[in-house]
Length: 612
Image (cartoon, rainbow, N blue to C red; front, top):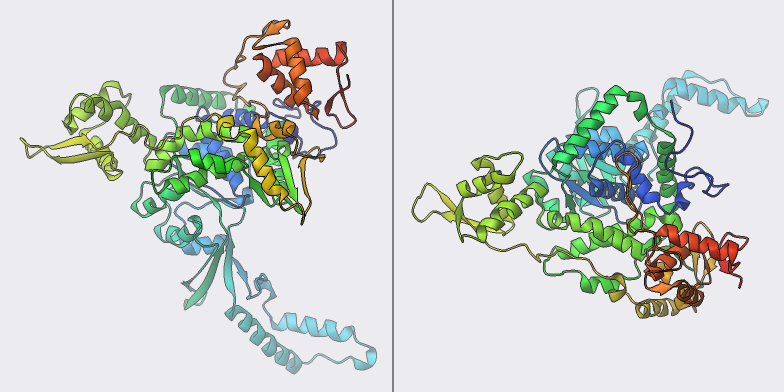
C-alpha cells in the first residue's frame, strides 16, 4: 500500500500550485534527499549512487556520459544500478546484456520508410482491405457517380498498391533512436552487438548505418538496413573483456566499495526486507522523486545547453600530462553540467535572444570534485579499485624496502591485511595489469629462472590526481567581469538577460553583488540518511552576541553592502560564511532582523529585501 505522506519533504514549505514533478525542485537539499531515498535500498557506495544518478540524467543532455563499474563479482554493481535507475522512465532504460544484433533490432528497431515515417505492417494491402476502401470511396460519391465494386476492380487496385508497398519496403530501414536512452550492460555485452554500437557509444558519429542478413518467415534470406542514431548514456557492469578495453578511455571508471561495514549493512537490509517486506513497497517519496526525473527530462529539452562560466580558468588548473586527460577533462565538465541540470530549478539562466543557457555554479564544481577524487585513479588507469588498492597496500610498501621482489613476497604482503586472501596466481594476474599501464615491470629472476621479479616503474603519486582547488583562487570576481564583457559584446545584436528558472524574475549579473549567484555554494547538501545514521551539525551553535570572525553589527554592515534581494537560503549562507556560525544560528539571526528589528521583509514574490 502506497504511503500518502512524504518522509523527506516538508510539503507545506514547498511552493503551492506546482506540478508534482517540480515540487521537489524548490527544495535546496533535493540532491541529498535523493541519495537518502536510494539508501533505503542501497547501503554505502554514496559516490557510486551519485555517479549513476548523473550518468542516467546525462542521457537528456547534449553530452551523455559512459560509466564503467569494475570490480570483483558480488560487490553490488548490478544491484545498485537497478535500484538507482528505477527512478527513471522505464522506456528510457534498456538492459541489453548479451543481446545479439538481431534481438536488438527486433526489440528496439522501428521499421520506417525513406522519409522516416513508421511503417505499420497492419497496413499491408489485402483483398479485404482494398474492397472495403473501394466501397467506402464510392459510397461517398454522388449517387450518379457510384459504381458496383467488382473483383477485377479489386485485383487491379491490389496490384497497384502492392507495387507501391513493395517499393516502400525496398527503401525502408530499421531505425534505432538512442536519444534520451540509458543503455545498461549488466553482463558481458555481445561482441557483435558491442562492435555495432561502438561508434555511437564513443560519440564518433551521431548516426551509423549497416546491413544484416536475416531469415524471412518462408526461410529465405533477406538483407535488412539498420540505422542507429544519437548518443545514449551507457553503463557497463562487466567490462573485463579485451574487445571493450579500447572503449575505456571514453568511460568514467569506478569500483563499488568492498568493505566489511558495507557487507554487514547489506545483510541487515536483506534480513529486514524478509522480515518486514511491506516496509519496502514504493512510497509517496518514490513517486515524488520519479516524477521529478520525468519533469527534468522535459524541462531540460527547453534549454540550449548548460554553461560553465569558470571552465576556461579550470582548464588551466586541470592536470594535462597525459593524452587521455583531454577526455577526462571533458568528462569532468560534463559532470559539472549534469550537476547543474539536476538542480535545474535553482540555477541562474542566461538568455541570449530566444535561447536559454543554464549556468553551473561553484557548488556544482565542488560537488563534482568531491566525487571525481574517488574515481580519478580508476578512470585514468581503467583498472578496478581492488587492483589499485593492491598496488597501494602491497607493491608500494615493498618498493620502499627493496628494489625488486617476487610474486611470493607480494602475495604474503597483501594477505597480511586482506580480509579475503588471494593466491599467487591472482597476484600474478594483477601484476600483469599493472605492467600494462606502466606502473610495474617484471623480468626473470637473476638466480632462479623458475621465478619472476617485479619492480616499480613509477609511483602513481601526483599521476594526475586533481586535488582540491579553492574556487575563488582560479575564478575571481574579475574573471566573472571578463566573462560578462564577452557576453556584452553580443548585446547589440541580441538582448541578454539572466533569471532564476522557478522565480521567473530577470536580473543582471553586471553588478558585482550578483557574483554570489555563481561563486558561492547555494547550500551544502550533506548526505544525511535518516534510515542509516543521523548526521550531527558540522559546527557547534555559537553565542548570538558574537561568533566567528565578525560581530553581529559587522555582519549586518557587510550584508547591507552586498545584499539587495534574494532567497532566505542564500541570505543564511552569507551569514554563516561571514560569522563562521551554524545554519541554525544564521536562521535565528535572520528571524531577529525580520521580526524584532524590522530590518528585513518579504516582497510580494517571496524574496527577502531590506526595508530599513
